[in-house]
Length: 160
Image (cartoon, rainbow, N blue to C red; front, side, top):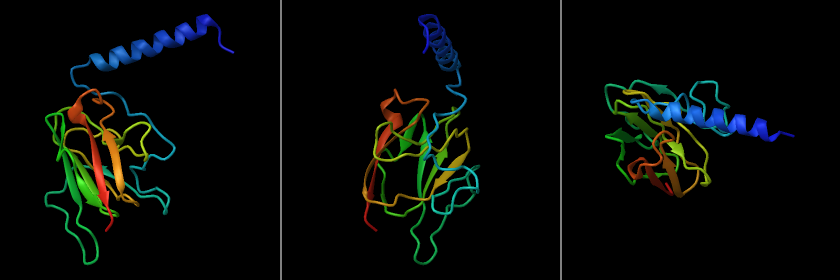
């Protein structure tokens, strides 16, 4: 059981961390919150789970093989997701490209019906999410800039 002094010390330490993190001009925190169902950013993800990788964007646009859906690309520009209201198909890969100078994430909104985070995306980095497994509407945001309406959105996933 924590004492009042211990709780106060923990609160002050947390508040100082948030204050220091938010006061930098780069709007860059150390890492977004993690989840037990966060998609891996390495090739060591379990075979059953969709995988994601973070790297610099490819020079050419991804193309679809016969029978596969083309990769849908969402850019982060001027502290906004472009397009703002993406529509994809079940199983369609989604590439998130950060074109801003500031770091961003593409992450499931808290208390939503899905769990995912791209992790930190610095300028020029991208991540490929392997796609949704069910149709629906999935709220997303940037963990670093969730207070900005342009850094929140809903992706609509239709049946393939």
